Length: 256
Length: 256
Image 1 (cartoon, one colour):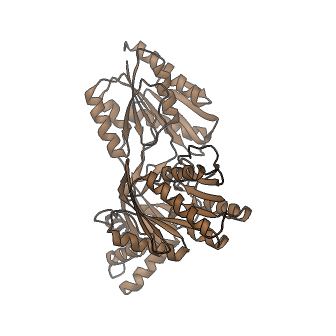
Image 2 (tube, helix red, strand yellow; image 1 turned 120 degrees about the vertical axis):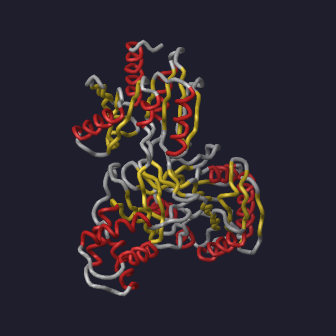
Image 3 (tube, chains in turn green, red; image 1 turned 135 degrees about the vertical axis):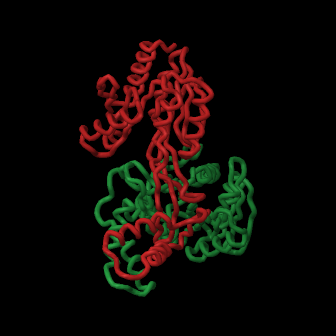
């Protein structure tokens, strides 16, 4: 049985020394990998971000990625090269990357030019400013934004959704998605997790809330496509439950 | 002899799961600490960011910080609590923190309101837009920016300069500053390093360029207030040179 586990968090460059990253450490992904690796019949490939915690067991194959673009390329290569029985997509993938950065004064001057002259109704003015906001900042990213500038604006744009790739490339694979929100009601979290499941044909989704994760605790709910719900309280419990559910489903489906 | 070493890189929250960080790992700071720790008479306190590499030698006192605010607080507390003969400020401190974040459409609507009606000359219009750009976005930071938004703007503002604190709090301390630029001519780098030295009364500044740093190489120039210039090629060389120069200066100054 071949299992692909993504772990850690991608980061996106602002310039040559600054980046947008997230709080993911890869610890949960490494525990999930170690759980699967206790089983001699399972081969594990870990797609890890640069500083992610690695599995303790040596048998895992480790591939490193940095940003969403390198993640996408590596997923495509991997899923063309071999068949995966399961994909555990625990990596926190940046939703946004930097479209451009600009000093506030330069941005204001560009917007003033675009507004031009003559009076307009407020709605068309807002639309005009919006279009200018998004089309500003052509040209190359600076190597390092000078720290002499008082205020800098970063325009962020959405990155492509990686989770959608897995079933597209290998419809037979068992897919586990992850939904992390921060400080929301459980019903909102579960709705978001079920949306993720539906949109990306996940077989399972782990729903968790940043505010219920700390050094010793990791509250989560593992949702199944069959409407099963398993409450879990630590990273070790989560890792064990994911392995168990995936292995059972693989057996049911006749995967070896 | 008491030495304070800052190492790693600060990060600034965008929301509860995203942050702006930098490429610093704390590896150079940990090597500098280990160099000083070979000397039994030296006590080392390391102010480290959350994921910074720690010194190998166990004798260092480790204090953890996350963002610029926690760094500032800890530096002030430390320098009130004890006299430091030297401060090696190798930490990459975020120049910017997030003033506010806003969906592009919301920002455009705010700006359209502020521009109001009637025609204006382009300069006063730009000034008006600039002031609106900076004053938008009152209210609390969202716990997690929804990834449904197509484009998000981050308004960044400068953080307080930490390097200025050391000599202000302890004028007698020997201060080593660090200047990192990316892909510039050496003369520009040296000018920037000398400016840093002058502005913050550094005794030494290590000037280095991101593009001349990789796994096995770390090109740098150690500048002294006495106009000395020492070229260094690896992290180990840098750590040894900083220790040697600081110890010599401490002896000259009669520090024990």
